[in-house]
Length: 292
Ligand SMILES: Nc1ncnc2c1ncn2[C@@H]1O[C@H](COP(=O)(O)OP(=O)(O)OP(=O)(O)O)[C@@H](O)[C@H]1O
Ligand SMILES: [Mg+2]
Image 1 (cartoon, rainbow, N blue to C red):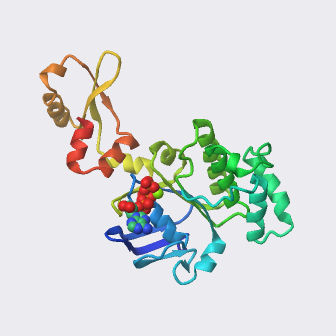
Image 2: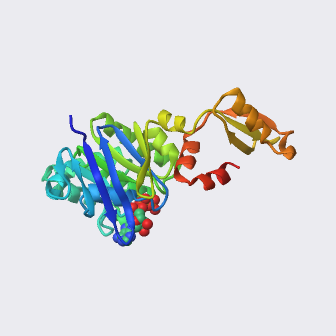
């Protein structure tokens, strides 16, 4: 079966290349694109959601070409983004009704708006103008608006940025539920816990290229074996040194501990996704500094 999202040789250049010949096939489930500021995440989402055109290559959503048939692609997808499209001078409920009409729900738009307000804990806020909403309420309304009809593919560009921990978890469970109902979710995030909590598959984008792609377990495996970690008396990590898990490499790691730190407590730690992210998103020299 063709993937839900197929990306081939996709490039985007402004003054400089922002996306550099990406190839990616996404079958289903939750896919997280992880990358630091400026990596090109929003640019890729904008191309896949037909807002901007690629400079080279192609992308298809359920076999439909995003450049040649943007109208048909828009029927298949929904998106919430960093640049949100809520109308500040309408109430939350009016916004949802408007999205329902745009999505062809007609008279059913009102009922659907009320369902969504309930689902996202916005019943109280529903009759209020969006200009009075907090950041978290806006995010939830934005997500609700993208779900007026169940899309085949949902794009979420940093869906929980600015939310408190409770609101983040509630968005996560909404996203998971959608994926379980069969929607393919493509989300971008800068935070590892989000990718770890949600994603069936994670790709790391750095400077316009995919530098890693796999499950959480596969990505953490790329940073190698155990790390030797030195802790001070209150348990703060003072130093961590990569090893490949063999006795010889542990020996070398211990040999590299400076005299001043030899009295510290030493322990072994398995790599975390955090370690993988640091390793993958920084150059070799930065990496040395980050772990030193
Ligand atoms: N319209 C534009 N014109 C020129 N350069 C652009 C334009 N849009 C984006 N860029 C550049 O492309 C690069 C990638 O931007 P993009 O917004 O895709 O990154 P991002 O991964 O979404 O970052 P963030 O995590 O900060 O949202 C940046 O260097 C940005 O300055
Ligand atoms: Mg962005």
